Image 1 (cartoon, rainbow, N blue to C red):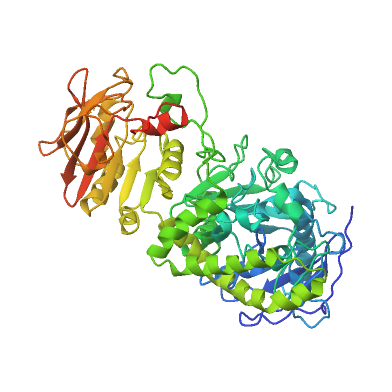
Image 2 (tube, rainbow, N blue to C red):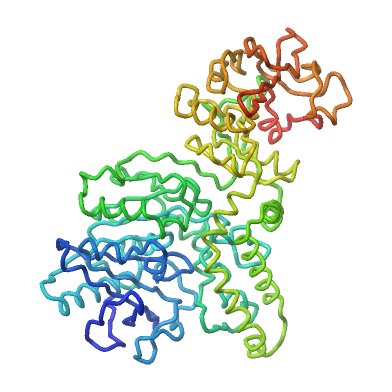
Length: 615
């Protein structure tokens, strides 16, 4: 269906100004209106063949590309690109022709979904290419390159596949997707309607928008300064939704060159959702230390974008074609070789969800965040608490709610926007415990959170030893050294972490040679593949240590698989195997820190009915 696109603003190109951005508001489908912002390229820079369209994500707007410290629009124009930025439906638009936004216009699309956002992308491209060609000298654009963040990627896919009311017009050349939820978003983003589901709040852009903070009303209330969000869109983003199943394995059309960026600290989409299975023509890039929203405010990302758009296949960025995929919606069997340390267990089972409510888990982080004086996180929580109160409001007259809460919520929304990026970082920094994301790390996280009520930070093998500033203890789960023991870089990271005062706690490993990765020299033994597991009175306490303070028996009820044959002379043996008198748990000092290593597999055992109360 051909969409009728008309201008609400006057037909002249507005002056380029970063201090006062003026939108052109146009019609999209179903009566919705969208904003377009244009930025002319620097005439002193080499001309580029295509403009760049920036597409924002869920519950966001185009300001993320131009109002952050790293101004993507400005950087692109300095390098010779004309830039287009879109505010998709739900955002305030210019309704009276004064080039100032005043209120959202979503028409008949209050319950809009990804396909409607795809129409917005199509409308923006069709209108903008024609507009630039007519109003800027020397332009003859046929296509644009598109850069998306988060849900914006799904909107582009929908348009390119002609899933909405606007058919694809062959006007996209390259797409670079930053942190896209191509397989859906976890409950950290999509399941946030109720205040009791707000653990992800620090990872969502102005998450508690006005309209659904007050969504208890049958009629929708929009308070100035907010946007109109769609419950249908949130449902579509759930990984198991019918919409996401219909998008599985698609991505943009194959004739559109597609690249995908993944952040190793992205708790919103993880490292599994961006990956499009079955597509061998997509280039991937992993960015260390980036969470979901850092993709819109990163000098490194700007460098990567410019390099890829300018140099194409000659660029070193986005060249990985076989991504690592770890679908971590729920914990799953993550052991090396689908192996496990219990010799008597012959059925592969999957770990259950962590038995704690989202709000309960958030409060675990908040408790330690308060102790560490994580100021932005605390401000964020204070603002969210106010929105929770607003959700509980029960009056018949909706105007009374607007009068009561409008001004206060507007102030708190400023706090949410100002704090979300820093609060996201502080959320990750809050735990005292880090877990290496290898082996049975999901099971270990479940064990620690449920039994010790301690939040954890998951780090992969590329972690920086500087995490010691926040996390003093690094747990290496059962099987956690698999595939890493020969990496000199990984060994160096462990040594540096312990050397500056950190403590490493190691569970049972598959093979004894994998212990070579640990700091210090001379540690060796036998892993669970090289030993027979013991379940009853498997070891006795040889030397007292504070970690045994709760034990009442000389032979605790511990499940063990493996033992140590070689260890540093300065090591203290804590547990000794009953069957062969070999050490099963020991500790030693390395520089300023400490290593505690054992053949316990309590992490795997906890989720499979093998862990005892003593453990």
